[in-house]
Length: 280
Ligand SMILES: [Zn+2]
Image 1: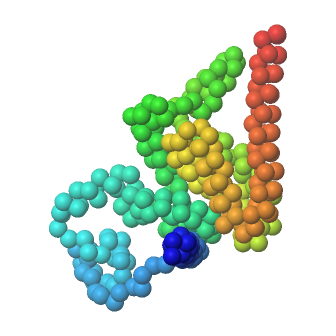
Image 2: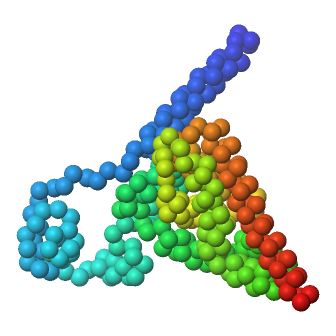
């Protein structure tokens, strides 16, 4: 009998592990389905609204004559909140919704945005600036998080003042770095199966979204923030362009090398230019 006990225990733990595995698998399948499902708008109700602003009757979410939102009535506490949010352009498209989408299904979300579903996202450049402010505030509140993104001094006046500015403006710094990816990305991914022939302006917005993720990653330590950024770039490119893991990885490696090379060439150019102007 004594020998049977651990046997049962082993069987039970095996069964447990199997159910645990099934749960994870189930969760993952649902997560993947959510990732791949494009945003859908609820069917328009036929309920007739009366516009308080211009007096027309209409169906739908907005008055077709003056564009006032349906259901606007007396001023309430909620109106105060909405009034403040308008300042940030947050009244219609939820900032939080866009962030969840961007972090949960980056590539699909970016593809929807650049392929014409502008309304799915909070305006990306504004989102980048707001996230820059938020992350800076958090870093200010927790000074241990703050680190300099670029070396503070190189002995070249132009570069040093540029670096100083960059360390204070993380969002523009991140965008500047990401913009180095626009052209090589276009070149390497222009024949991508899921989104062929993307244009350079579309490439700009892809990089704005990547910068938002990059700025958020700054909340973590150097190494972790680099891993997060790299992971998200691979995952976003894979979902957006439709190559497999390997196809995405080798193309992205070339893109990254090009981006680094470009920054290096510009830096060396400035340093040489500075040295030459010093000797003259
Ligand atoms: Zn109206």
